[in-house]
Image (tube, rainbow over all chains, first blue to last red; front, side):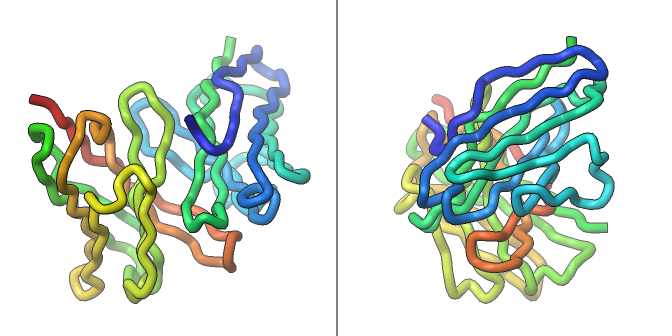
Length: 109
Length: 122
């Protein structure tokens, strides 16, 4: 059972906008910033969004993040086939642990 | 180019031990906090352990506390994970992860290794 809650799956057709939610508690998302990671099968996870809504260089601006209260969300606009993979939210928790969501498997139909 | 290369994975019997290593290159290893994160087959990512650049602070997930030990050798640009008392549920891919330090509660993982597979089975 993951500390952060994500939907197990999401899907969309090419060009569509998809959002993935991430729900936590006051001890993690409520007080600290949220990061998002993408894991494409066969590759290592990579940083997608940091500090709630910041994109590292090289990440397309189709990806955006937001945080409100104890929840966060990742939005992907202009969905592309290469976006298929698993998406994880993560945040620091005041119990001195990093916590992850259970992951959301994104399928591009 | 930042590189993190894990090694030391393999098949081990329940109750056995393994020592994972991570060779870092392309950055000032002694300036970064580091972590181990794992992924069990068919499961999500699970944070395992954290160590500061000076080793002053070390944290563990409850699932491995008392069995795993994280350490580092800054002179050799290396991170380690000593795993004792291994259980079937410890099976998975173990990633060496660099943490970008911004401020308390506002850090992020900015580099991941390719992972090393640990299988605990009799």
